[in-house]
Picture 1 (tube, rainbow, N blue to C red):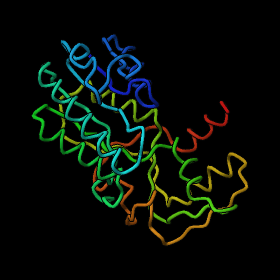
Picture 2 (picture 1 turned 45 degrees about the horizontal axis):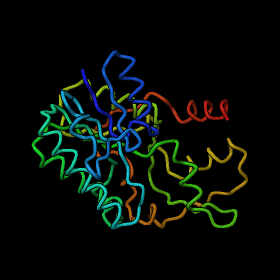
Picture 3 (picture 1 turned 135 degrees about the vertical axis):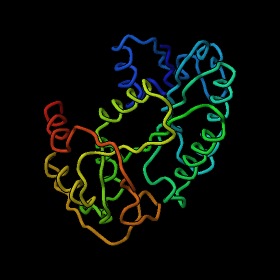
Picture 4 (picture 1 turned 90 degrees about the vertical axis):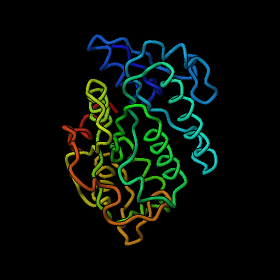
Length: 250
């Protein structure tokens, strides 16, 4: 099977490419550096020739409201138009759990538009909505830090390992189009609990202060915006296992 992975050199993409190649599939790790550009359209027709499945894992280089919207609109239309011409049988995109609940965020508005473009394209698809990754916990803490205090909303959190995300994406590439699925980590706790455990394990002296101000990267959220609303597929890697592995390779 021929599979094109857009964003195939990133955190998730590189893992997906390795998994699919390990199964013997012909996989193109597409990126602008490889001459395959979803914004300009360069190289898309050639890359998608005789392609069965396209996995879109690309992300906007800018999170500024206007720029991120233009990225997902332009990339989405260019990629899906090329897929229609090439006869691609399955389009897979990685999205975010709760994206429809955080629409005062410009990034989330753009991701929801990306989903809508996919749904209206006519190409059979699976949109995988994922919770946040364990790998982003340090960044979440950093953006919430003032002095030596990390101010974190006391909302439910169910992050997942990037390795598990890649496994689910690779499995989806082998399956029939499913429309939409949700994936999450195996454990659910208040967000301050995850941040505290991470900081303590890494020897970080910052203190975590839980608060009732339910804001996440500038977006107003509810207690359950960041966790699956219904039945989700759960990753196999616990936070403790992931953290232990990170410390061993630090």
